[in-house]
Image (cartoon, rainbow, N blue to C red; front, side, top):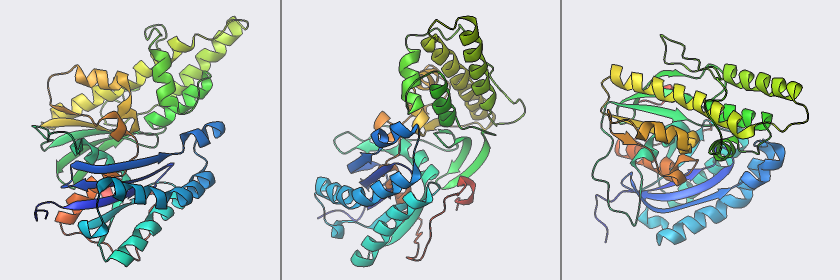
Length: 349
């Protein structure tokens, strides 16, 4: 029989192109975690095709939840609540996960909690596997978080659990979006982040001096300028030597260096100014080896970066955030709707 201190949350995630479910204990220990990826389906479109994504979620959601419960060796009686991504994301995709969660809540009587997807990414820093020992240290507050993904690039001050202050963010393209667009410009496949990282390992990051938009006096980013600079350089190279292949690896490495350099510098400045106890890096772009390497090379602040499998969209992070809201006695009703647009600043307690 489990202890009363063991709170188990079923998380459900379907905000974009990953159908996922997970069971997490006490907001950190992953009991089971299943992700059904659609990347191969969307490669031919060069990005996520919303209608295809939502249809695939419908096909996958039941199987993913069933497999998650089987891997956890649990029944719904062993759970305390269901946490589901409410937004932001693709409306059609969000609705699939929300309806599945509502159906389970209705039939099991479990409370349901709607979670902000970005908040989930932040709580990925607390996750560890069921077969791993509990980490000796966990994030402490105040913390500075760099949230970087395909749709978001933000610096966030976390004052305590569930209390966030957005310091700044992208004024145009998010970092992940810029990676996707530049990958297409230089002939690499979708998704752009992994493609550029792989190509950059063989390139010279100092060959091209792409702009690093610092936007001094703010915590904001801008990546449209570096994207445009890559486009101009590609056209220039093609005009100068139309019969020669593009130096793809050098372009990738120089672009990656420009983006990760600005992300690193701004985050470190924020951590110093706000006397952070630690730095958290989260979101899909946190899987980038260049970005991770920059932060791992500093010794001023304890660093928390999720395992690679928890950087991209998953349901364990949704369950982890759900735990914090559950113990804060938050519950949502079955008539709640999805929020395709939902800034993190609006979810603080």
